[in-house]
Image 1: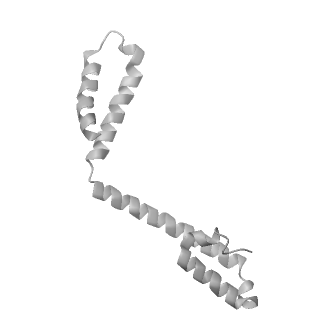
Image 2: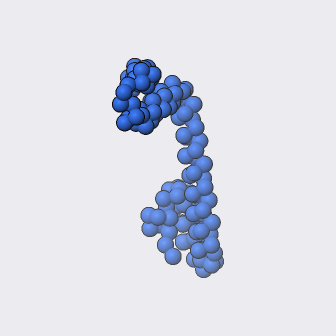
Image 3: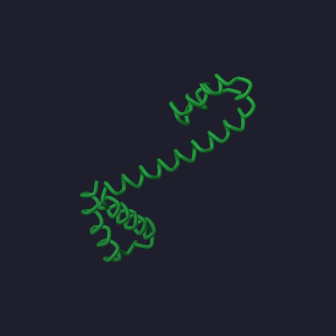
Length: 111
């Protein structure tokens, strides 16, 4: 894809610079094509390892935030259950640690 964009970008710029008679008709689309192609080429040339690491880091942060919300919600929901049903509460905690954020949605945790 990056190779095609490298070929296409100079052609698009050349069309823009030649100022054809009917440029007014499609000037917006041409400008958008040039900007989008340039942006896409720039992203393609970035270090893929760095981009992958950034995505992984963002996913980990989102996962932690979701887990924190689920754990606080589960703790509030089951505050009284721990003393009334200690074994059940321990199993719920183990399931949450074992299956992560999906444990609360899978039916393992139910109020």
